[in-house]
Length: 237
Ligand SMILES: Cc1cc2nc3c(=O)[nH]c(=O)nc-3n(C[C@H](O)[C@H](O)[C@H](O)COP(=O)(O)OP(=O)(O)OC[C@H]3O[C@@H](n4cnc5c(N)ncnc54)[C@H](O)[C@@H]3O)c2cc1C
Image 1 (cartoon, rainbow, N blue to C red):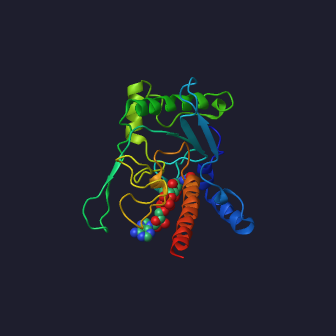
Image 2 (cartoon, rainbow, N blue to C red):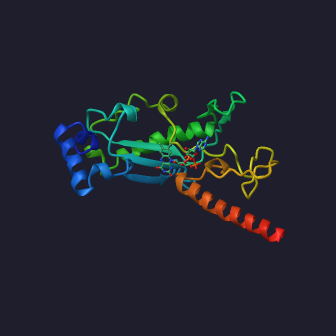
Image 3 (cartoon, rainbow, N blue to C red):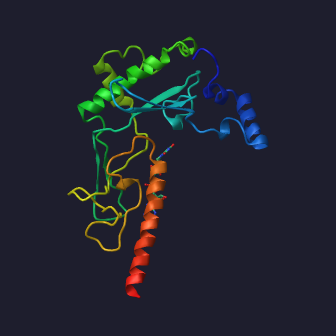
């Protein structure tokens, strides 16, 4: 950006950094109290679609990797994710020792639909950045960078640079088909007395963030566990 109005500028200035710390210590306000993403947008990569297929999380900061610290220049990040990806990955148990970590195969961007969404979402982002309200504030596009123009170049960029938004679901999906792990009361098929209650039971990913739906699943499951326990007690009496 061509004005020092981002969190990068705050963090890279030692005096402003101390002020941030003081503001938090004295008033419990300021940048240290804010969520990373300040703007959320649900929109479509194709106006003809019935409902949004992508979601933005906009952060007033930028970094190559979060652990590396913010860039030395003023910038913000428009991170965009596909809401209902059609590529599915899987988790593979590497041994019968429960202490061994499983192998995770994300299988990102395997389908044509997902590849197209990745390409189009970068184009939508460029449209937003070029809107009259934002354009005067922008000095240059740091990533992907204007050298990436063709669909092939944008897809290649997405393959190399895209990462998870930490919303994995569906590894123990609820249902009654061959791939289902739990039934509609979250009981593991074929095993008595065992339930799975977490994001893994979603048959397909929700169109948005996963934390609130997971809490909803847990609330509903706790009701079902109590109902089933009450029924067992009633039958025993
Ligand atoms: C960095 C990051 C940022 C995120 N940001 C957001 C966000 O902004 N908004 C949003 O909606 N979602 C967000 N999510 C996703 C959200 O956190 C998850 O969808 C949600 O927490 C899933 O809940 P869960 O109960 O399925 O799993 P978890 O929350 O991972 O809970 C699993 C629990 O099991 C425990 N556990 C693991 N192994 C064992 C064991 N062997 N014995 C006993 N306990 C064990 C773990 O300690 C953990 O407490 C984010 C996730 C990450 C990683």
